[in-house]
Image (cartoon, rainbow, N blue to C red; front, top):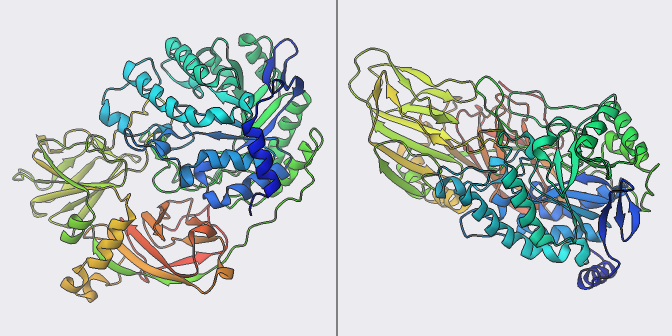
Length: 637
């Protein structure tokens, strides 16, 4: 769909002129917002631009508007736009300005949540990993001078682009958040909160309303003087005590639930979150009857493409990684289709706000393209992979973290020589593995270490060999709580019994650049050297290292292009690239997510290149399947 000429002309006019009457303010005396001097209430929905293919943004926004929403809320992910120190990205999925212009074209206001910490179940809560490389001891979300300096640099970049879109400057942004759920953070740093308020206001200049957002029980450390206080909470039987907590800290002003939860997040190994429609409608109606403004978190969830999913301090090892899908049991599915929950909420919204005179978009087309058989290329431990896929090789007396190596995600291979065994078996102890270690001796798999379980010890036989190899996978940095300084790799001493192992070689496999994978597949001679029979033998466990597979999905014509779901049943754990796009992590062994969502714009007529980097096991058929429905609440082990 294209924005019509009339809409574009209107948009240019809107952003190019500022009316003296164009204001968005808080009328504290009358407990309301004023938009251009008139009482206003928003019913908004969260949709993070970085969780959807840009070609789908407009359709999703249109579906949201058709539900009766009058605003869209989005976080801004610092790490997406500033992936390396001094490097900024504002195109493709990072084209925030385009997203905002599309929102205007769909008659939606915008609520901007720039953080700088966003949580959002994203890697490191949206902070760029390189902060831990540049300042290993940095105290994030405090008045640490190094942290404040980097926030200032980032905000100068961000708000130079956002300023024209602020409501008072003629744009759609009516509100800008200061920090994010800071009341839940242990630091409770008042100086930091006030500094960030002033820094944000220096850019916003009263052209939008500043606000904070916290749970009802942690407002003490979340509230900032001179900033509108809002809350977040899910369904409840009694709103009175919740609003009463707000009034303890903000006696007057509009009531706002800035994160009302129609669904919830999910980690690997857990059942898929499910929140019934009946459980949320009553509280929603009661809030609207109280005159409150409400934002649904999430209204459209989307997908954690690539390595973007984070983790939380849950489970037996105080670590559980977030799944790739961010379906969230939201009113719109991961593909953006309206659900029965959407229809129920739309009916309620229509009682309080006029519904737009536009139809609700139907489901997007889905296609089951069937099975694709893959071919083995090579193992990660092969000389070809080391030469063509690795981006760096470092020697050091102790293991170095991903961050010290300047690596965002993917894998690092740690290698050293085992000393003479004094016992048989001896115990290999790697208490600092973050997050998952695949252990080999002389190129043969001997066991698995895992932070989430937690398992940090492994018996090794004296007959196993001499060369110790540990491939460490980053499963996502913690996004919430005390441990957001979540260093990856091997971050403590490794011991055989009580003897510390030293003199390590580290080979980096960030798996960020698809071109390296394609070059490896094209130029590898491992299959010829080992013989296709050996490399392609039908097996389950990969005993000689993570293996790269490739194949082609053939699509006859553009008329056949549609959304689809890649079924990874029978595979173990890894990542998938399709036409060079990293679809995200899969782990059907534990679930609940078994399929990976493939939006139609990723596909093309003709040959579609599939590359799988599998860490653990393959199905005996070496096939994967494209389905027309997702599998989001199962496991295949």
